[in-house]
Length: 474
Ligand code: BYC
Image (cartoon, rainbow, N blue to C red; front, side, top):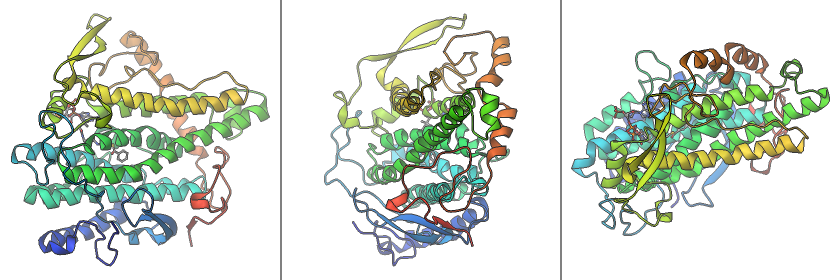
């Protein structure tokens, strides 16, 4: 379905036919723009950026590329096409018609999930707002801004649902989404990872690889929802999310490639020598990986969750690709997982499937994360080295669930609290690591040129050459 760009708020939801809703959203729009100017990419409002914008929601033809100033980006409301006679695909409501309105009994749960999802979107823009000042290339700067404007649109997607389906409470929640801020001591963002600072590009690539991938799994789960407008919103958001993970995956690969080049030039793997040449040594990359992977694991919630069981039972939130499972009821059976036994050992818990949904989705996420790690390791092997990057154990540095606050090393061994305290600084980026990485973040804005710590990408955007001026800075 083509999107109407003549409207003040581009949309494919027939906004013009619902004057009350249109007025409410037009009232929210200037607040969003104020937020963007204040909390979005700082000092780049006047730049011309080569961005893609959605023009239709079908899989092939949705992206149109052109030069835009970010505040003029056409943020809008786009739902994937409706599936005629769609039914709920899981839980106790299996086979019943999907809901076109919010069932009264699920109102507060759905609102809460939509708010939680919506909260992450502006949070990530806030986290990344200063990165433009230290971009390693114009290509990367453009990708950062593409990610930012699309996260802004994802916020629009959730705000539309709040306004259209949740009355006054929904409008109030939409306002609140612009008043909580990432890292704010008084009004932080809802989920932990979205309050972590992203003050260098290595963190940005880790975040887009690991945290946006949580986004993929959560959006896929919500795309199965019995609440059809939520399912269709998330379906379309997923097409945009794919590029964000690409930015992370290729970004980390390029950092690794550059490091390997420098190691070869030097004939040494010595981290200090690698740093001396302006590249980021592999152990530092591993520490950043440990930090963002462990933080992102918490975003799936606890292993045993009555919330998750009830989302599934009631048809509110399913599993990614629900159709690929044989059993959509999950009334029987259990999932086993290991938890600390409280005496320094490990015990195996069997949890009814519905209560273990968070863990099932987290396990699929871990498998997905491993794909990139294998790819980066292939680069290392190809360059003739034996070191490896690896995902730390999912027990490591957890803040949510059975392993929360437990002293566990990256290999998954339970250790003493004292050993944990002493060794943690070597497992995640230390202050010295962060200040070294930050010191390398020198802004490079000559078209086609890259900072010393990152290799060029394999190709440009939309078949344009690498030295295309993706952002015109004036
Ligand atoms: N931090 O039963 P439990 C994305 C809370 S990312 C703080 O274990 P549940 C994006 C939880 O809220 C995807 N609190 O968890 C990526 C609950 O609180 P209450 C975002 C946390 O409810 C990059 C309590 O702990 N989307 O899109 O089964 C850039 C115990 O709850 C955390 C969603 O998250 C945490 N990490 O599952 C831009 C989807 N984890 O009720 C965007 C919507 C748990 O005791 N959210 N808690 O006060 C959900 O589906 C669920 O809320 C969660 C938690 C999966 C997050």
